[in-house]
Image 1 (cartoon, rainbow, N blue to C red):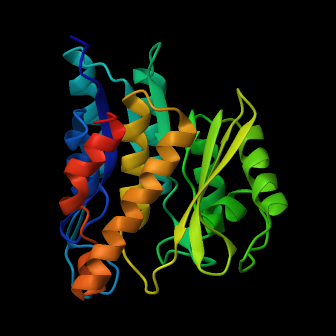
Image 2 (cartoon, rainbow, N blue to C red):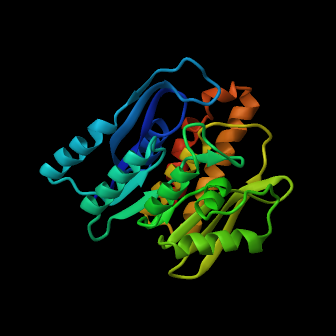
Amino acid sequence: MQKQKRVAAIQDISGFGKCSLTVALPILSAAGIETAIMPTAVLSTHTGGFSGYTYRDLTDDMRPFAAHWKSVGIKFDAIYSGFLGSRRQIEIVKEFISDFRTDGCIAVVDPAMADNGKMYALFDMKFATEMASLCAVADIIVPNITEAVFMLGREYSEGPFTKKYIESLLFDLAEAGPSKVVLTGIGLDEGRMGAASYDKETGEVFYAMSKTIPGMYHGTGDIYASALIAAYLKGRNLADSARIAVDFVYESIKRTSEAGTDVRFGIDFETGLLKLAGDINNV
């Protein structure tokens, strides 16, 4: 029997709301991947649309976490970082990658810091520069359009986008270090949204698109990145992994929209986990 894959997921955790570790853990687990979590912060809810939430910063716990894991000889097939709340946390994740990335272990960075042309309230453009330095040491990065242009020092513009523009972002991001780039939130024409992937080793660019469902849905980037990593670690190539993740997010949003669920509460990805596992494993 093939040895079970193991991922270190380094992100915050919200008690309510579907994002970060509360989606990474179930999605990776459903795919049959063992997931070790390093919480960077604990919140009562996610921050999108909620007020009065609690927040506990766990930065001071991150290095002791890593030291204990190192002392007992834990090894990983992938290191996956998502939302990081400070430049100090970025530096700690860089150290973690340096300490734990052995042969066969990949580093995946979702540089969660901006969307819709704006940095999140916690961050400034200096943070984008720091995040770019983390992406430079990753094997796979999964930015959205806003994060991509900010890390490249470009001006943000609204879509729809041309393939020439999208591919210029992909190539420039890959030139900075990572061998594989998946760019999310791209619209090439009205009514369709999806992702573009670029594998520097093969030179392949691949587009995975779905219908656009109106509305603002929280946590979709985290769900996408987690599904992408799950598929990739289970042996699917980058293009297939990007397509599987796009389909999974689209179907989850569609269920949520049809149910009329409060969009602050996140999307119904749980109902699709069995199908996702089947798609990943060709069942």
